[in-house]
Amino acid sequence: MNITEVRIKLMADPNDRLQAFCSITFDHSFVIRDLKIIQGTKGSFVAMPSRKLTDRCPHCEMKNHLRAAYCNDCGTPLDSERAIDEEDGRAKLYADIAHPINSDCREMIQQEVVAAFQEEMVRAKQPNYICRYDDYGEENYARLKESEATPDILPMSAHQPAPEEDSTQRRVDTAHAEKRDPHAEKQNPQPEIPFPSESDSFGAGVM
Image 1 (tube, rainbow, N blue to C red):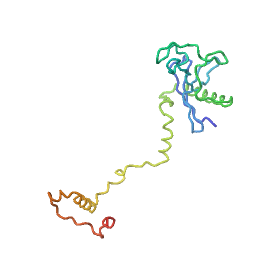
Image 2: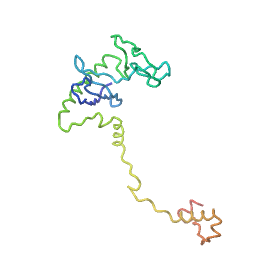
Image 3: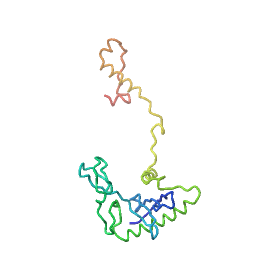
Image 4: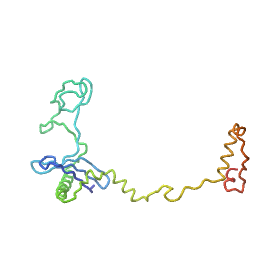
């Protein structure tokens, strides 16, 4: 499994510890978005996308963030120190949504993303710089590839004019309509319309 694309979205404030968001694509097939590039004490590192951990209010069962002091639904006071501590003693408030499960994969992601981040910082200084992270979503990639592989199918009107109505078909429809409405025959008598013969192109199909 290889990283085939990295897209970076730089933060506006260069002094912010959160330096950028990024997305990575594996084997042109699978995308993970919202990885974070954070300035640490030993340099930039990659944080995987995560979600806030929650628990339920003992009174109304509504979910609340672990540091919430009151229930967002019923207002019941909550213990703000109820989160479980991690091995380093810090409260565990977030859980990764996607993450590597071995050191080799983690190191590969770290190197590829940090290298792409440094290249993006150089490109950002050039005139007419455009961030690819938001301006060209991954969800459009498959549609674009399909449109390249499949020729455009134009409406029939773009290729040829709509076929004219068959005069024989029109006579048949009129004849059937008159037979279904006996009152119309009495009030507005119409001249008899000859039924198409077998020699007509459409008549053979009707008979």
